Length: 498
Figure (spheres, rainbow, N blue to C red):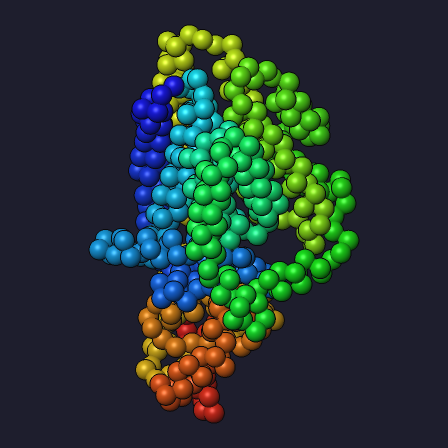
């Protein structure tokens, strides 16, 4: 299939999905609210990225940050680009994630179409990815939380690696971009990103001329250096850099996981929940995947190899993960499993079917099914961590100029008080109000938000300080704000509407 056919087929495919989905979920994607919890923490990092101050990725509750802030700079750039539309930052972040996912899927399916004989091939791959998102949560298409934000990019990364192994240098740019993006945003992707990149380059050097691959290797090195400048600056400048925190977190539990627990964890991404014998289903998937003949299509051979390597390397990595195996740690395996099932269905079809009219009919039928199903059943959930509560609290506090607000978090009544505190901090940041936290909680926001650093940086602007104590004695809103002027009286600020 030539490139024009691929572009037309994929444009029809994505518009058949993207337009019905955006129409169905416009009120979910575009919403005026202030984020709480993890979403507020990420939005605070976007605020820092606007001024080129963000050096690290999303925070982790294990005491470190994910390696890099590439996703935050992308969202900050989207805010700048869409500033004239006067949308809330939350809405712009959702739109940016939806654009990133649709673009990633488009490029992935375009690469697949260039290496396939049938116009049906990219449609089949997309249907499986769409079905997995439908099963988990349709809001994943615009969800900005780190583990979910890398799923579609992970699928593009694996396919780009296969294209480079096939000798197509066109896969190099998406490989570097998506590899950097997913590794900086979700550190657990280290199980697949470096290994697949090395394999791809080794295979490519055997097919390309020495002069060509050396030039591309040099160009890739420069490109990578630019993308990784922020975490490199942190490594050089921070008194305790993030790499040391990552290492410390990995050494907390040297025992890791048992083989059975790691295997069961990995199976959850590949085997439907209704299946009783998950191991046999999983083994059968890969046995059939390797048993199907490939004729002369080397791209599918490389893709099949990479998918198998992803599973094996992730299993080894899971054995070393300390603590509980939370589902979000390996969320990128939803993308890998969709590629496995898509390849399982595509291989026999490409090997045996040669009737172009039947291919076209099936393609149109699948696109019609996809468009109707998306329009009728892809209704996303509202984000519970997005409301006006934090904005109302800050409004009642009535922030004063030349005042530093110190946020204290009381977890004795509710361990989730930090989530509301993040929302309050985000609203203060967007209003240009100075605030800080003690050393214990500053990692949730940014190291620069420690009270000592904020006082030193704004010494001439601060005339007094006030304390905002966040706890959960107000059961209606889950938080009670107490505003206390240092060395003075205490003032209670109600979070309930008058």
